[in-house]
Amino acid sequence: MAIKFYGKSQDVTQAIIERFKSGDVPAALAQVFVNRSDNIPSGAWSWRNRFIQAIHGTADARGFKQWKDAGRSVSKGSKAFYILGPCLGKRENDAGDTVPFIYGFKSIPVFALESTEVIDAAKWDTCSGVDTTEENRLQCLPLADVARAWDLHVRSYNGKGSGTLGYYKHSETIALGTENLSTWTHELIHAADDRLGSLVKKKGQDPSNEIVAELGGAVVLRLLGKDIDADLGGAWDYVKSYSKDDADKALTACTALINRVCAAVDHIITSAEELDTAQAA
Image (tube, rainbow, N blue to C red; front, side, top):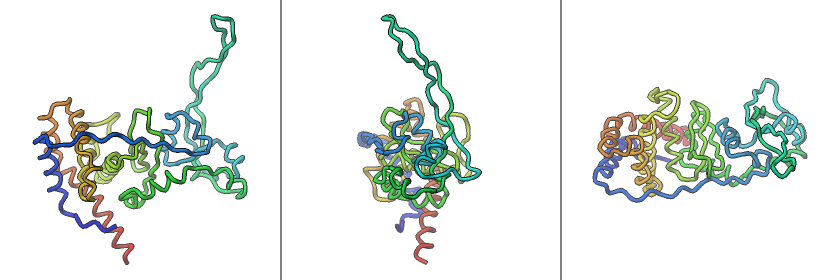
């Protein structure tokens, strides 16, 4: 996909800020949450464990024996990551019946699909069960080739009820809980900001990181001609939330961060143009 808007990011960013100032912004778009229908063990996991799976860059993770039963073997030297499983006990209720209860959680090691290899093709054929429609949607996201070129895994998780719309994991993964393109470009801007060394690294969310990502994501989508998906109403609400709902502070923050926003946007666009040139050659 050729992108012919390089150099316009400054103008587009400024135009968005002017719309914020004037109050001429539409209502925020409703979130369309991802609802994966994977027919695999993790399809029955809690949202928290599916989120852990997604931020580890895979759509399918299982225990060592589960992979064997599915016709695959964990590759030598592969590292597990951990999900949480309930510790169950039993006790009597007031009626004298014995009932189960959860008294804590334990760590359970699992391995990503990408850390395994096929040992029984026929068996694996019947156990692969990943939601191919959702995987294909992820592959077709605008600028997905840029994320792949940056060695980022792009994965999704069932977002409804999770409390998170998306997540960027340093130099590894973008995890998406909603189909809205504004969340996708928000996380892609985080990745670009990180690659440029501008991302503030701290525990929890940093307001400058979030404002850059939200404003930059809207700029990218407007450069791509996706004005509705840019969700300026949602972007303005989000930016204000990181300025304690003070509109003046939000506008000041946007203006102060404009160079950082444009640098991240231009990094994405330049990467996309370089990929187009390489493919054409």
